Image 1 (cartoon, helix red, strand yellow):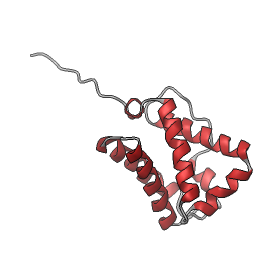
Image 2: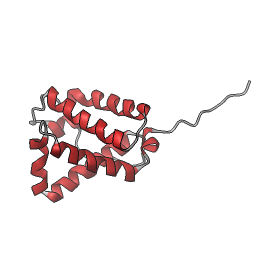
Image 3: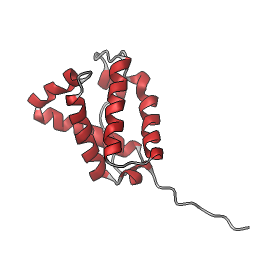
Image 4: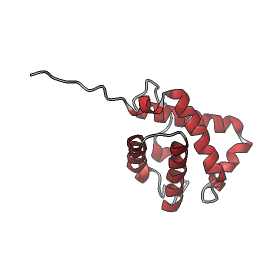
Length: 130
């Protein structure tokens, strides 16, 4: 009996690597800045471009590392990062909606979007109400 090994692409590979993840993160942040439900949390970053670049870099590294890429994430954990923000469930869902909008724009398939949703929901308790 012959064993067949499937070549299953990682989420990182399905995204197209770091460059595509970086483009998606940039667009997601713009979506957040234009979303009235969460823009107040993101618009102040425009006045702090160095900090905004750092937040984006951490987000890219977090997603790359967590999706099977070679990058290392050296930022804070999600609970520490979101402590004191008191994010509510409506804001959290708006952030997820923004992410899904950008993934659709980048023609990501349903499995990829479902995997991203699973990651987002696995982190929910580390962000909401902290």
